[in-house]
Image (cartoon, rainbow, N blue to C red; front, side, top):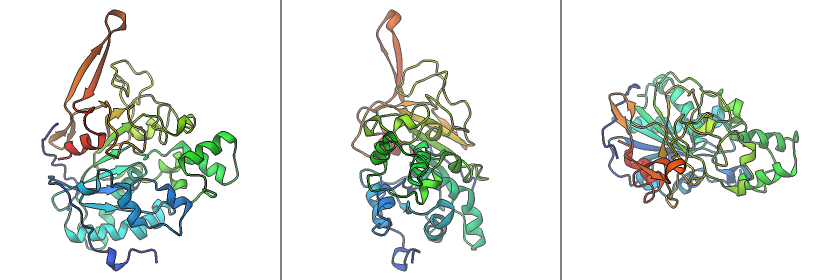
Length: 356
């Protein structure tokens, strides 16, 4: 574990949430140099049950396996709305004002996101300085984001879902995949499903002025009996493809975030690796031991490797201790690189340990 301090500070310092929720939530966060703010991903139950959704409780439940008690704040949002619509105006904006007034980020905050939270965070990073300054408030000092299974590049599953649910395309394979991913009760394409379409996602705040480092943590495991993976380009975690989770500058069929190492840690030339990334996107951890919905939880453990390590953040670095392992001999000899303690700690624990 690298314990160096990150000092990146390039940014200076109804449906509306009721007054009772306007107070800062109470968290039991461990001591860190920077405050941790969580932004969850797609809550499929809110797609199927809009009227019965409790967005705040859903947000708490989403992170309860590991991150809730280690964070200082959450930004919750409803899946049945659009990112540049009511998610921004009715949910994100009140929370940003609340956090600014509390001075929570005066010494720096990091966002920890999962899945679609990556896309929500990008929209925040692109706009929060102007929004808050126009209100006479101090912008949040967001020093970095830690994006787990990020969907900032969208998901082909959303393209399939919107097409099927609007009646444009349907077959048994599509029906089976959507039932596993969204649930059997989805009857219409609503809210953030439209934002998650690959072309739409890549148009939302694609080039934020703030040069906040986006550190990426990529899963490549199978779930849903493999029924969803056939609709995703290249390697995938059963919900988002590697072009999205790695932070590639364009959608494509990529096998790894690194040209020299596979997602399982095997040192081998990767001819189908991502070669160009979105601005300030740095893929760090990769693993075929985790699927999309396992990487932000505490229960799963398994070998993880690195794509980039010791990423420069201002004058310091964030990185992992690694070790190499050799198997076989002669023509069958293979070399692997793993992050230390990855068999004993969950991916979330490994990530938390390197947050400054």
